[in-house]
Image (cartoon, rainbow, N blue to C red; front, side):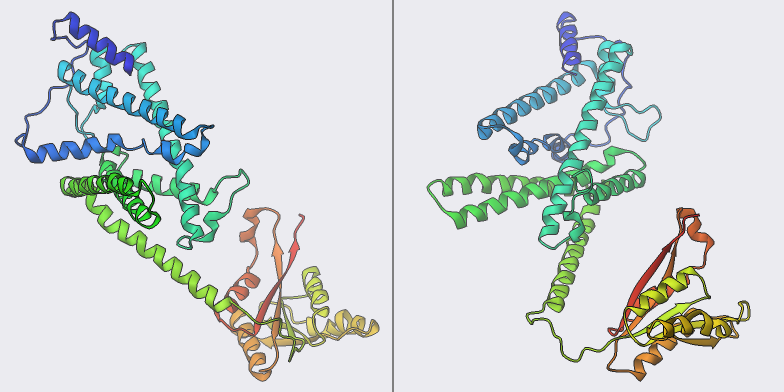
Length: 444
């Protein structure tokens, strides 16, 4: 882009200040408003967004080698110099070649950089090289968000204002939950605004400069508490910065209100409300789960084990074998419908009772409930609650056989009664009912 601006400057000098565009840009429409203070404020609001991003040097200063402060200052000065040069060059070239911005929703829309490049060098291989280089820079710029946003989420989650899952690294040693959230929100915004990124500028500007205002105000509070030789000087600098960025926020909101800035006035309080709700939940959970007492060993009784079964098979056998290790009182509960065979009662003595007696193990009893209306889940839940009422001093352990398919698409081929029963029991919020899943993994 600097090369394009240099060529444009050279052509302007050779043309005595009146260059001819190789491909003339579209003629600007007649101004619909007077060039007054309001237009100046709108231009200022748009230009402020071009200045954001330089703060990445300070946030990423830990990546520099020593002396970090000196290198960071040089880097920041270089970035500001390049940014000022580009802004001045683009503004001057637009004036010299009569390039003006077009509406993004117009047919044949081009960005200002594309119009400048076509006016200066035409639409040849160098044009595409310039556009591709700009695209690569934008891709790298977008990547910075995926680097910084997960770290911000991690810091907020560590204070309890976001789910703790945001503090966990994935297998690639990155904070995956923050990356997934950012990708989802970015896609949602692009879809909502139909891919016109110009409409996102008000949201970005308000959020960025509001963050700058809060950070500068926080530094003022820091220097006030910390004190020191240079505290007053630092407070003055940060105070001026807070006031300047706060004024910028007000200008952006006022000038871009109908263009989308109003969304931030709803979104920011909404996000703060959600964060406070997350923090209140964690505080309540921490208060309820905290236990200053040692392990209580009094009044311990073995549980009553209930094994819901559908018939006799390997998964039923595995669940019963596991139940025999938990308690001496085991109840195998079957809901029999008109669509299923009723022969398990006749075979129970041979299949279960005799082997258990021969080995000196507790003998599981079989309870069969007839269900003429073919309901299975709710009769099972009702029976478990009946046991809970009959034994108020005992825990109820529900051992649920669970079939685990080898392939995900096979999940839909089997009845999920076990998972549904477990979900209903969890939602019942009964502290004396304990759920144990016994899986059987299909190999076929």
